[in-house]
Every structure is written in C-alpha cells, then in structure tokens.
Image 1 (cartoon, rainbow, N blue to C red):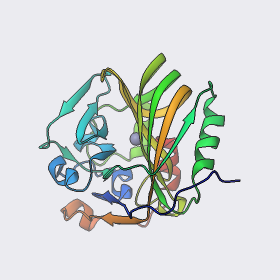
Image 2: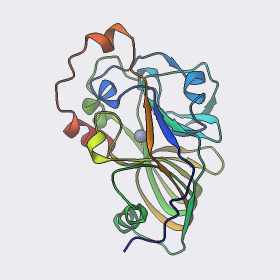
Image 3: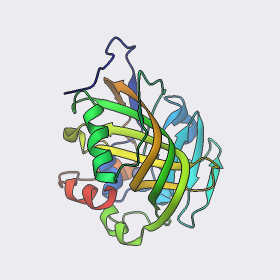
Image 4: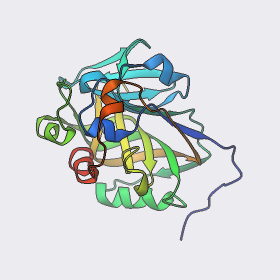
Amino acid sequence: MKPHWKTELPESSIYLCAPVNALVEGIFEENIHLAEILKHGDFGLGTFDDLDGEMLILDGNCYQINSDGKVIEVDDQILTPFASVTFYSAGNHYELVEETPYVKFMKWLNCLLPSPNLFYAIRIEGKFAHMKVRSVPKQENYRPLSDIANEQVVFDFDHISGTLAGFFTPDFMSSLSVPGMHLHFLSEDRQHGGHLLECVPQKITIGIQMINKMELSLPMTQDYMKWDFHRDIRQDLDNVEK
Ligand SMILES: [Zn+2]
C-alpha cells in the first residue's frame, strides 16, 4: 500500500538543458553556462563540459566533485553539456531511523512514490553507515559514455553525514534523462561527494517533490544538430549510471 500522499500541491517543473542521449553518445561540450541553468532551478545535478566531474546543485550553490575526490564550489560561468534542475520545495517528508541495506532502502524509497510515471525531486539528509560514490576524470569529446564507466574513480566512506540530492525519472523518458533514481552525494563538511553507487542509511530524513511538468532545451550546436540519434542508448545508460 502506498503511504499517505499529499497531492494538493503547487505544480512544479523540471528543467533539462539537453537530452541525456547527447551525453551518452559522447557530446561532452554543449557549452551551456551554469547561469542559464540556475534561472530554472536551485536544486539538481548534472556534469560539466568534457565530463569533468559530477555536479550537484543545492540551495542555488553548485559543487563540482572531481575524480581526485576534491569538491569545489563553482561560479555560474562554468559550462555544462547536461544538467537537470528544479526549484526545490518538497511537499512530502519521511524518516528512516534504522540502518537499512542499500537494496532494501532503494525498494522502500521507490515505494514512497505514488506513481512511477511522474518526475520527483528527492533530497535526503542525515547519517550513513556507508557511502559509495564515484566521479569521472575529464574526457575527450566524442567518446561513448559507456567506455568511461571503466575509468570511474570510486570513493568509499564509513560513518558520514551529508545530503543526497537528485531525481526520479520515469522509465520511458530514458532518452531525455537518467531513468529511475539518480542521486548525487555531498558530505556535510562539503569535502566529499559523487554520483551515488550504494549507501547504507542510518538515520535520515527524506523530502520528496512531485513534478508534473518538464521543460527541455535542445542544443543548437553543430554536433547536436548533425548527430544521428537512432541508436538505442538504454544499455549504455545502465552500464554507466547504475
Ligand atoms: Zn550522476
């Protein structure tokens, strides 16, 4: 049974600065300024031009989590090929107060969503017994994203506090955004983070914002306009994002 869900909420929308299929095909330079992204939201995630680290946007601040493990707060002139944002305002809150293995936790989190056919912004704060995240080293343009999974740098942390933030995307939108749960982590001290691979939450609060609108920008670059997007990218996305 689904938990109680408040549906009388203001409408909210997610903004995608480009479809994710362009990134999967290796178009790593769309040169979209972060300033443009921030007009559409104060919360979200993505990557940077040349796939130079993982992006996390929290409360309007943008963090770049590099493959050497360093976290840098970046200014709004930095460039991105892919980011998705919303103005965060969670309508539903939940708590989890017992240590929960990752698979069980993900199942529970997915069960909180009243339908798999909407977007959700998800913000999780608290303590984790374990956190496994990754970042990627800077890449040359036009390398298929799936090649890069082998080069990701994985970071493991025990007993760490921080924030997981990101989105749930409906399965049938996999050419536009990463389907399912896609979360990035930033530690409380803003020193560590990355794209979530696994975690064991201990004591967390969860905010969930239902999103029923999507705004999508299509790049006007030569690369994007000339590319043939017929290939099914689903397997590649699974390899690199799960
Ligand atoms: Zn990610």
